[in-house]
Image 1: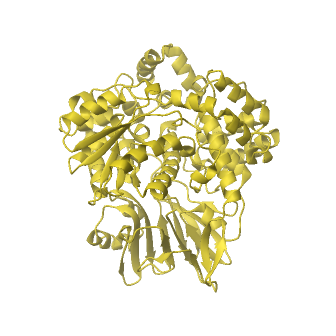
Image 2: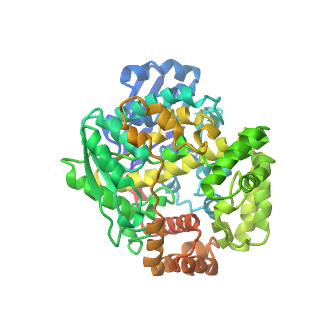
Image 3: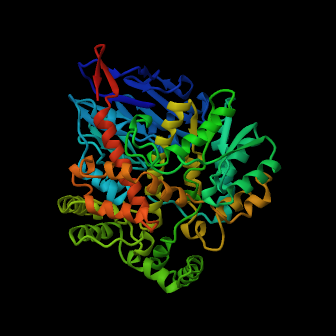
Length: 611
């Protein structure tokens, strides 16, 4: 695992990360596993700035930001293309800034009178063997929104820096400070399109350093990245083309390859084993990630793609993925609640009719789902959810049939013991009482939560690519500047019914980057067939993972009968709570891994401290 760490304050303990390297110019800061070329720093007397990761700034541009460090203009340190961690010192003051999507998360804790920070929560827990926080894990499973519990991480005694905030330490103490607004000033889609195009182009160009380049070539999002890279050199494009999917990704990929120079295409045929949940009987094949990771469930599919990439690479390089494109380029219909709250009833009705046509339902039904969320804010919604947790367990219905909510209560909440549900309700009620600086729009809140979740998950996929293939996985839609450019466009414009990905198509129409037939595409592939095949093929393994002997069961986070019913529904081919099951399986795998593996994180006086 690549990670970074540092400390603030004096200590008599000579502790440092195992195989760590000091960051030049920034005292008591180390990296582990990062190539030297992606760790850079500049200094001027007591002022220094370091960036770790894919940063599009050269050393002169870094040096030009040292006045911003002196003045505490922290957001200026996050405006370069790429995805990176920034560490700034100004005399006795230290600032650590992660990215907006959680690919470079920041955690911190006090240990032996010193503040330690790291991009790995597990590493900080290993300082003294801090255990998992079961209530925080319950929130992860039941709510799936990282910022609900603020600074509380999944590990006891380890604090997390919430999205859009930085860690600031000085002689007066350690705290988090917001550097990113909770919502952006609205920019109309036609105006924002050019900014989005430029941000994506820079995001791709920043990564192209002479290594071999591969890319997913499937939907509109990944195809855009592949075509942008192909403007600058050869790209090995791959399409997962399992016949069970019955989508049109492969025909579009074939046409695109014929139309775009520098694209070489390879189809990845599915097998009986390229399904969800395959290989979970042997957890040693999966990397230990810093948190439960969704790609645990789909690892066999990702490996099939990377196997094909590796077979056609002259040497390990970088792989572009369209991950998170949906999150920034479009929007779910929950934005209707914002239109209703703001009194835009005519626009809400017009959009509701469009969404109703797509879903073969009525506009009244669509608006009926959105109306409850329009009548409350985030704190009030959390109190309502807390009351729901104290009540009776619900009968399962698809999430899309439930009312829109600021923080939807997932089916996993209904699998928990009564005690855990009440503990989670108490924590959620307390969070509501302490909430400040909350966004006024549901879309702004849910967009940020989705991105933080996707960023953490993509980091797990990146570990699979790096540890097993030596490939750097790149997700440009998760870059700070891409996020800012896209989310400045109001959700009702990004997600307007009747137009597919209007922000991306407007940005690239007439530019010659993508063929016209790609920009006119209105279809998108899905993996439901492979999810159900995996549920059926691997039911015994899943029953064992989530059965009476599971770690989740021991903590009251799942109970046997609800899970057995869900798996029985899946085996019969009936609709089921797929997303909730993915969360539970990923969490169980993670708990087993951290219980049975002992990665070495730290060295103390040449002796290794195990976590």
